[in-house]
Length: 110
View 1 (tube, helix red, strand yellow):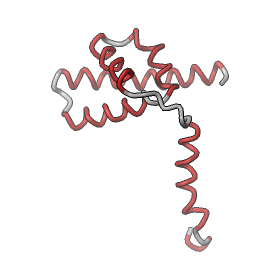
View 2 (cartoon, helix red, strand yellow):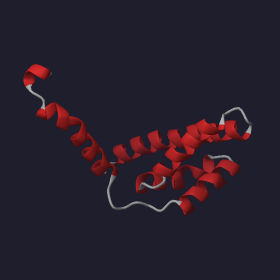
View 3 (spheres, helix red, strand yellow):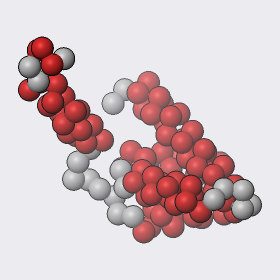
View 4 (cartoon, one colour):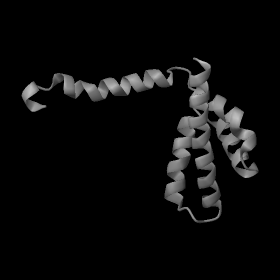
């Protein structure tokens, strides 16, 4: 991966972690409801299962607040890294699923 692509991914992913830090702080302050936070946790757990996001977390974590940093660190310990498929593989699988109906549809149905 080129340096430009790495920094682009880092910028995007670190921003996502900073956004979830805000959600974490809102939940702690009781200004974010439990169901919203549960959705955020599910997403964070999914993100930290992918090695590229784990690498970005390691790069960005020192800029996060202590309680949030500790929380995401605990997720990193709890959620195993999934090296069975890359993000690219997962994207291609989902794209193939989405394109399948379009490829099998009759042209008059489009």
